[in-house]
Length: 108
Image (cartoon, rainbow, N blue to C red; front, side, top):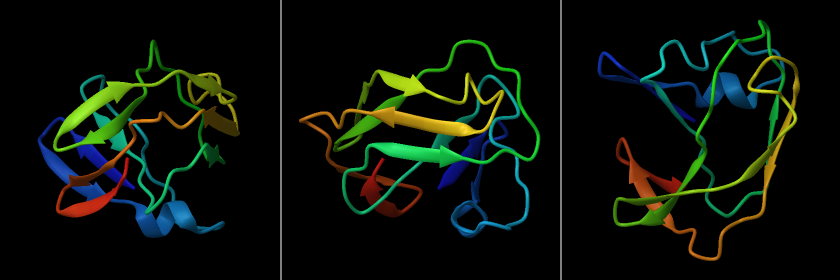
């Protein structure tokens, strides 16, 4: 999982995100930030256990089409824009492809 801050800078939060008792980290600090969730194969669910609930406006969810091309995807947001613990689910798009983010290749 990669976090792109508006500074610009990359932060790798993979270890913390994958552990049940990991160190807390910020999901989105500014409206110009991006969070990339990646895996080596298609996935249809991301589970969030939040240490502090957020308050966000409209969120745009996207996916990689490969070669630097991105599309938007409709999700079911059980977190209500990160205001509660829950899952974000999606139907994997047919054109979802591996792409590279910050030198890492995954399905984003």
